[in-house]
View (cartoon, rainbow, N blue to C red):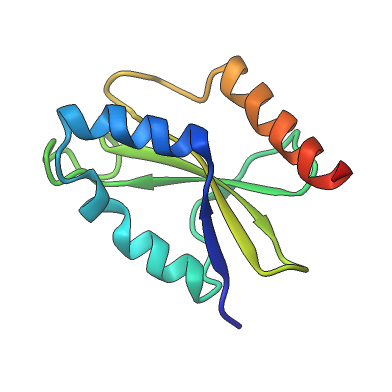
Length: 116
């Protein structure tokens, strides 16, 4: 079953900002997008959300540090509609973990989807 990938405005802003420092970031996550379209969900499920929210570690071609020092991508899966929402992304070198503000933005987005 093929999943549709949707990029939230938050995700687009984060990628635009990250691409200034890491110009090949889109290349870095293109394989992830291909896998998600096929229904292969990578990463660890993040607890505390309504639904399936995952955090996946990806290596950065620009940083040459492997997955550990690369990027973190957060995505939300709606299995009944076969949609994956790319929620946010950050570089591990500049941000240790997902912030409380980012968690709240994701919760707000999920609540909006569920209520609308």
